[in-house]
Image (cartoon, rainbow, N blue to C red):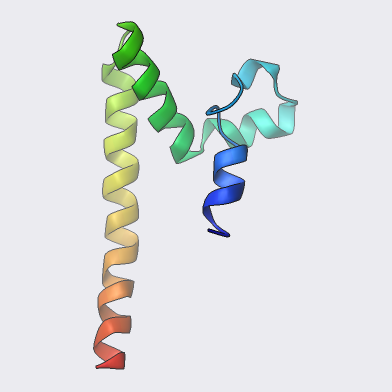
Length: 79
């Protein structure tokens, strides 16, 4: 929960990025939850959905590739 809270409030889930200060816009533009929120909005509103979908897939694959080996190594160490 400590990781998800800053990501959640630093994304475009609650407010559009154009209304945020410059430093928060920079953080929000590279936030994986912003990509997910943009994809959800594009699918619901019928906008262009290819770029946000590719961004969400890239974040998902990247985070899985990073943390899956760490989780497996930690699990093997405990058992």
